[in-house]
Image (cartoon, rainbow, N blue to C red; front, side, top):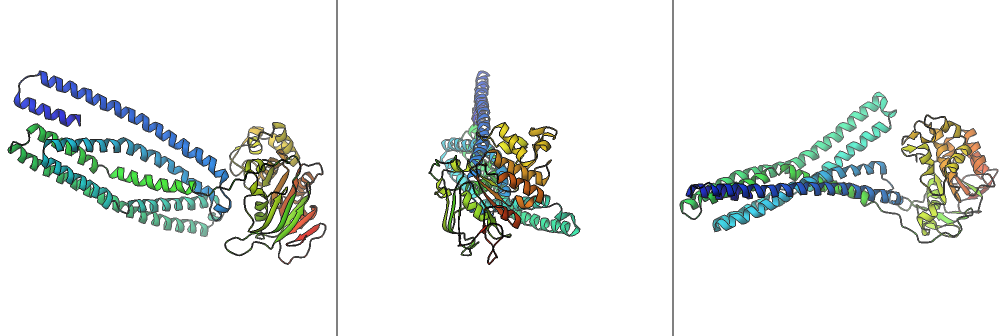
Length: 525
């Protein structure tokens, strides 16, 4: 507002005087206030940068804290890696917040001060202010109706497209055939169409706001010129005040006319917050409070009429009753879909039984403090390699695991020479898929990760079934040694693996008992 006020004073000075000194004073005063404005703008830019950095750090740090604690039951039916892509909306939040803080605050302050100045010039101009404020409110509230909803729909369709492209890149063999390529193209075409439909719906809201803002600019400038000219002729307004009023209105309405991109940034900001909310709203697992005082001994497991209902009242398996002695071994036997993984989840404490009790050392796993319990229990599943070195994939920054423990674990599973032969040995970087290791070598590495911590309870979920007979036999020889510090539970669909264990929990409905082991049928001991 310094420039319009200075122009007003300059016009009045030139019109009614011939001295140069007032002009110099005006110029120096204007330079001072513009310098202050520039300094404030620079400070705003710095503060906004700090806010952007803190936004990223806070959101990333919070998600890094929450994701390991997300409830497994609460994410059934959701694909977490794809859902985690919503994190990239933090960039949109950063940019949109920066734009709105820098330009939005300046616009609001300019509008408020400018309208106040107009109000002091003449009561008619105060009425003009009221009409201008009402028009701007109509622009934002009425014409902006539906903008947030369409922005969220547009954002969702964008992520549906991204999820499909992820599936295509993940299932490369499937989509290499001519039929697969047709499916990829047709599904992509449909998702692109959905995105464009949602995008156009959102753009229609933006367009009507932009058109109204441009119309408001033209009408407001014209009305003010006519009204101001009349007031000057009537000697109720000076010529300088008229020029200043025109400049003020031009700044206010012109800024709102350029607000199309800021409206879009605002709606994108709200849509991004909605997407990030999908991550922050994931339910966290309930934390127990019981400290375990006997974690230096192999765990004892009791299953008392345990069953689990998924998706309604349908039971995954018949009630299971079993007792596994400390240091013993048991096989959870059954085909695909019989609930082997679900039973191991309940022993591991990430699921609660729908009926019955699961007890580890006479306490339900969910009642233990999670850090205390999971530090001494290992669950081995396929696909849990992360992008890092071989050593870190085994060590996982556990304070009770030394470098020697890592090497001993690799030697126990028979791949220490293979790892040492890699270009960078233990420091060789693995991808999320385990490359450059072969798939079976990755599975052996996962078993080595569990062995390295010398847990009191080891749960193996189907990993041995994916190994060759010789590899599985060698690993069982290691896991079943009497001197090992753990109780072993193996989920398997192979008879001979189940028969190597002391007892079997058979989840197959109406199945004949296995030979060579103590068979514990659902509901029997």
